[in-house]
Each structure stands twice: as structure tokens, then as C-alpha cells.
Image (tube, one colour):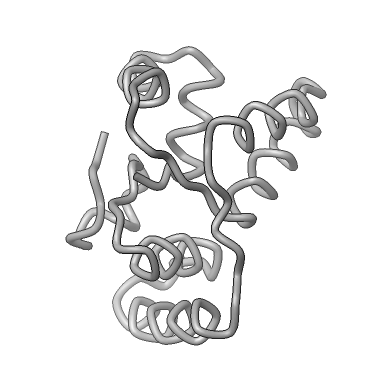
Length: 124
């Protein structure tokens, strides 16, 4: 399962939703992440509480990082172009997360409403 930025933020904030994420993070399930997710969490942490490096280390220790390659980039571009037809605020970062999950055939754990209509999403 690929943990999206939304889920990681809830986890690190210790919210009710974060408790659901914690169950997955502390399980034996193989977890994945994208460099895009690491960048989003790192940036958010720098802007809020300065725990960016600590969180990056935690994420990469617990997750396999899916390197971005040409195939993922093209898949992300196609997802982004299609999604923008109906969701004006659908970001390229979301497209990369979804493309990365599709690339290795895993689900995305998220609460981001941009993902709600995708079969790969596990909404929390």
C-alpha cells in the first residue's frame, strides 16, 4: 500500500484519521511511498514544526521508495490531463502518486478527495 501525503499528515498530527493510518503503518503490510510524498511532507514539516528530517527518516525507514521513471512520468501526465477535465484543482503531485501506485499495482491510502473516484484508493 502506498501512503499518500494526506494520510501521513494525519498520522504525524495524531488525529482520529491518523489513528487509522497508524494501524496500517504499525502492521506488517509492505508500504510504499513516492519521492513526491516525501517532498510534500518535508515542506509541510519545515513550514510548521521543523521536524522535516525526522519525518523523512521515519517514512523511508518504513516504506520502499518508488523511484520516478519515464514510464511513471508519462502515466502521471495522462492521469493529470484526464483529471483536469473534471477537477480543476487536481495537482500533478496527485497524478504522480496515483501513477506510482499503478506502476507497482498497489492501493493508495488517502483521505484526499481528489482520489475518491479512483479504484486504487483506500479512503480514510
